[in-house]
Image (cartoon, rainbow, N blue to C red):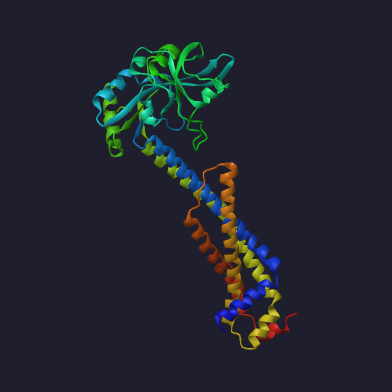
Length: 406
């Protein structure tokens, strides 16, 4: 019997039990839809994080005080005071290939204007911070190098702070706000960025000369960090080694003595986050893929029931010339049709679920064509694997005994 006739017989047999056929497909539909949606969420998050890091620049380098923490061991207060302004000057003067750089210090507290207040941070930086982080001043202006030298009482506010301190929409430029007890004149407003992938509000910040934060707010003589960018990404690793040598010399560390500072590049951070994101995506897909396995078991179960119910039919067909191979092929076709049809519906369901997640939850999502192809191939394989045993069982029936079956 040719394949076309077997296909028609399989379609007719499935059509006689439409509801049972659909319920059998349901496991595959849910499994494929879940796999595609989970992979879309994982891929979308991964790409979004890469874009966020790319905006900040993969050539960005961050220097922090204290050695790297191992096993969650907390560092002492002295360990966190190892970076000094002199270290920053040494790095800027001695290291080659630095495009922009800034010391960083920050203080948490309450911002106040009139009857309005808002908890946030005062982030102490210099004038090159905007170029490193690729930000712009939308209104007013950035503070100057002279403001940094004189520890001027000025600030540049992010949009979130402006909205909370000036809810009436009045112009904040020139107004005097307070951070704790320190009065600061607003000289600029940063451009609006919104939330990043990790849910952080990029407009919830206020830039202040780092000297102002050090001397007037915290009364400290050390830096909490140094941020800089290399002239190009290829120089990043070489620049990190150079900075490490400069700081070891500046801190008078002997050979074999551990660093009392840590250096991280944005490229290294991007690779680490990408690796973690990929691992989570695979985990999500694996969990969702379990339902595909359950769907396959459901197909095998229903096909076994179908073989039992149609024993007389099988015996009659074999008695008029159908071979065991024909019977096996027919039942395999039925299993594959159930699996592939369920897979196609599952792909559409997964695409719909992904669209709904993007619209209603506002998560970054991206359907990878590879995941669609993979799901379709897996569905076909599941149909073959889980349909093979029932098909083999049907093909091995004795025609005489099958005809007698009640």
